[in-house]
Amino acid sequence: MIVSSLSLVNTCDILQEVLKVRNAKSILRKFKVLVNTSELNDKILELALNDTHFRDFEDCIQYYTAIESQSDLIVTRNLKDFKKSTIPVLSPKEFLVKFKAGR
Image (cartoon, rainbow, N blue to C red; front, side):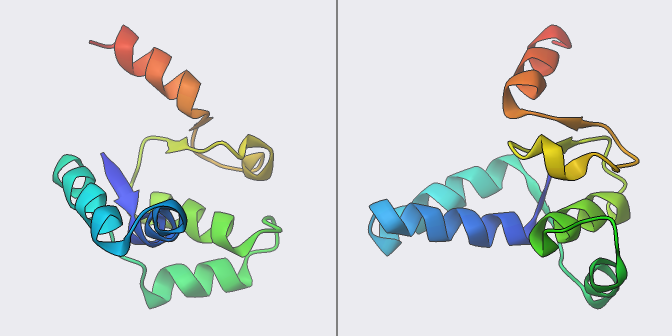
């Protein structure tokens, strides 16, 4: 499973709102063992900056990160902003159902 490095930063910000920094990082270290991260680079930023289909810049970065890392799908709670995605987009619940069915 591949996760955008931007997702780890965003997750850390959210965790730090309710936990101490040390605890947030501890959780992220454990999560990092389960996933690989895809780097945010100049190519992805250029693609996102020049894209006209996404209204939300962060969503656009997530999309091009998935494209560049040749991901099979995107998992997001924000399905409506990925209507023009060329790869499948699932909600977390849909992903878990599909994941469990594939086991």
